Image (cartoon, rainbow, N blue to C red; front, side, top):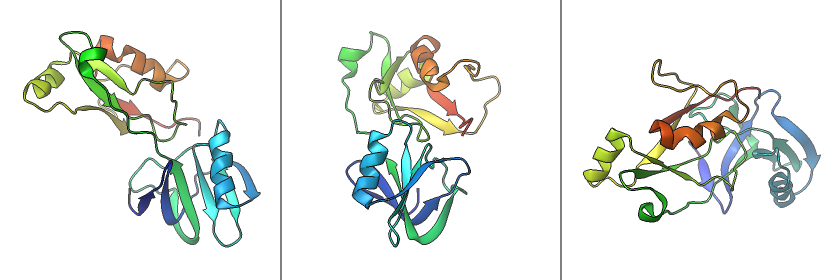
Length: 185
């Protein structure tokens, strides 16, 4: 995304405010540090806006995941922050069965980071196996947002926690990608 700066656990977009209708959990007057701490301690908070002039903190229940994102608007007095998941390293030989390859994945940006998820899945997809054999061993399970590939997807739309349910089935279905749509937010 454009204009994002990295800090220890947040990405910051200076002079930007996330304005998606219905995404504000709470609005309080506190310091930026306390705002970040409050968001981190609030289970439903995935990002926050902070006004540098009047110290207004807006806790948000979703995050910017499109580039460009029409919900992220320019406003010099605001900074927008969202969580940065940790960079995890994995040993394929320990974690995946013979004949499969390891694919790291990122969690959807619009959901709160869930540290209980593994951060990887194993697949026997022929394309992934060919890439691994050709020396391209740092492949990732790719998340596409708000797109559809008719005939190529397995739907979990009738189950709660659809992204997480799909991840559990990834090894069985030999997936190499995932399509996510923000719903109900």
